[in-house]
Image (cartoon, rainbow, N blue to C red; front, side, top):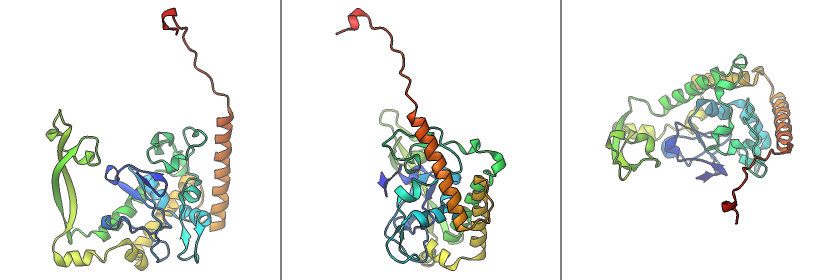
Length: 284
């Protein structure tokens, strides 16, 4: 499906839903996934569904936020009127690593195509000396801390829902393989869902949103974000104390470098594959 111009699989296919760090989304409120820009919910919603903590952390870090605020559309005052547009904020954002191969002209960038994972260099290929390893760990820590605050185990319990589902369908990852019918490809989905323990817990959980959390911004949350910001800066090979202007200068330089490399690769003449000679009975 497409959401804000970015191709996605169904959210249930992934372990992470990453929303850019300058946008508040109410669309996924039932899944307790919201992001804060200032203190005001915005009507523009963009979500990127992927399986890796690297991507999740990159979009939640200060470096991407600085780029997005500079590249976004200004519709009102800066504190609440910056619109995150994928074509300017995301598709132009240079990742810490280069792409495996340039995209053909006329296609969107791989950042906007969540299904085009083969165009990304794996995290393992990033130079370890640049500190890429701490990034996924810091992102996972941030996510775990927030989830713990959003859904305290003392207020919730897991209920397993069971219903039929098709292999390869949106519930594929939760299908019990032992129950799949070989003829129909349908099996039993066992989906674990967190639910409130009682009515009083449900009332308290309604107050636990990321908007409320970021308005409060406790010390542990601020520390987790600073740790993530430092890890992302290290993945780029940059110091963690850069000013916003310095971040923009470096990102722009990296963007231009990548664009030049892609243009040069696309300008190379294509080598045509040799064709075998056709037999007389194959000719029309």
